[in-house]
Length: 202
Image (cartoon, rainbow, N blue to C red; front, side, top):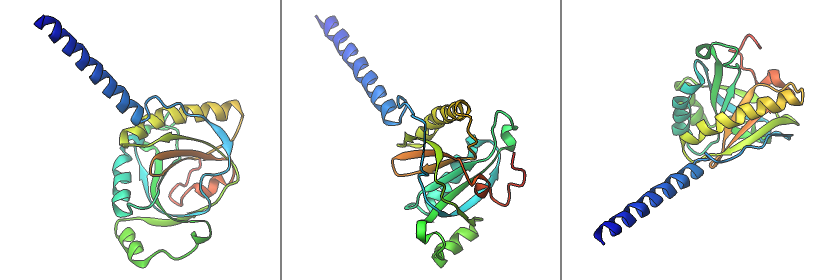
């Protein structure tokens, strides 16, 4: 009898562990299926404080953490300029930034104190345009691991869509809301999303 009770307890424990794992995977977006489509930009004209980086995209997390610590209430932005399947992953160019203002406020002056802190940390400022249409998708964001799962699903799906529809969409943007990562590739004004540091528009 005691043996049967022990087996039942073990089985119930395994079920509970399995249910917890499934819940956590669902929470971070592991099971989420992205849907790619063409539509209006998810942001309007925006003023961004950014850092230009060269290196493996997998190393961008520390830059996002730094930006979030400086401006915890603002949305974060990443723009990725190179295809790591065509360019040495350690030579890929990208920026990580903070969206300071959008729309009619994009051309206004940044708070001097905030601007000073950002400049001390090595940030530069730029205004990115509004675009009427872009290729886009989204993925839930709960913890940093969500970004990994999102990237492994969003980018292949977007590339497949762009090739199938014979579109010219570049570069690739990530915009972080509180609970969502938005992925976007502009269909117009692409050059205006390249910073001064990006000289070769591959």
